[in-house]
Image (cartoon, rainbow, N blue to C red; front, side, top):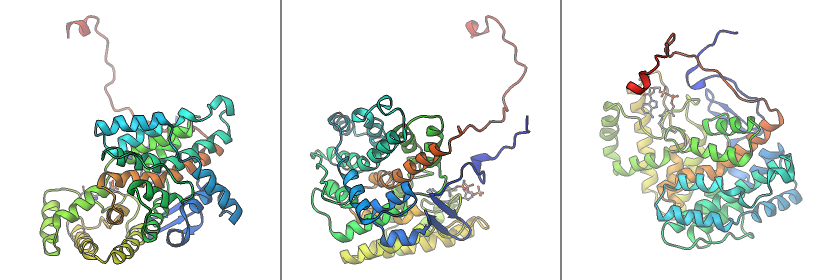
Length: 387
Ligand code: COA
């Protein structure tokens, strides 16, 4: 047997080949299926990005029209899923847990594995269903827990416009739709991050895509992955005024706390997505005529990066995607605990694309562990009963 090398956190370990995205942490570059993230964020609709990830090329106008329609007609939730969400709202369950519960129940009205033979067709149907229905789950839950009736999806609207319409109960402003679309395109895929890896591990066993995305939601909700934007925004609000930023952040670092929205396993320069989202947030706040929060956030960011360099020299801790996600989503009127679910609404396209890719080149993902426990123990009969 080859001697085992322990790589904590699997840092630097290459576990898959992918055509979906390339993250260059040294150069601060993110390429999504051949396009710099800045290009997709500026030009693509979310439907175009999903098609690109699943097919490794952009659609023709006809293909895009058909694809949009196919997604739109899958948006409505089975009544039992709405009932489940109503029960979750009654119990005031956190939104990510409600999304996980509802995602797991999406197989209710899908053809079973048996009827399609666990085929590529089945996998695509599950992928379409997950991408189409995540916004409906999140928006329905957001309204149910406010005591409001869910807004039924409108198949004539685009994916992003419909999501906002279902959340707000009124037609969204075009600047908001573009802001959300920029966000969804920016977070759609990001190499072998923890939730994507989780999804690939699950399908690598021969399991199905809905199981994979349900597991991925569990991985995404942790504060070290997708759970940071809420706390990042809280921090900006707690700071409140520019002159309080330095003493506030210094106190946190002195206490050994982490600053949410900073640091990244891969990026050692500014996360390129942070810049794209900062620009999108600036445009949206400009449109609304109130730039105060945006200016404060910029100041907090600059102060935090300066202090992180002072307290953690050599670590290159820079702004990550979560910081401006928080600002942008707040500008769209989302409650902080809907930030991570909004991340899932974008990332589910990447998860499903990775699942399809894993299925095409599958080998079960099964690493090893180094045993560091006791050895040589002998079973003493009666010990268990006596204890
Ligand atoms: N604030 C303060 N210190 C930080 C920090 C932060 N945001 N991120 C990392 N550090 C410090 C660690 O304390 C550690 O210091 P030490 O060597 O003195 O103990 C050092 O930097 C390396 O951190 P490490 O946890 O090994 O880095 P990682 O690659 O495992 O972690 C993150 C990456 C994202 C988990 C980490 O930067 C973090 O917790 N950030 C805050 C949460 C966040 O924004 N998450 C969203 C990620 S997109």
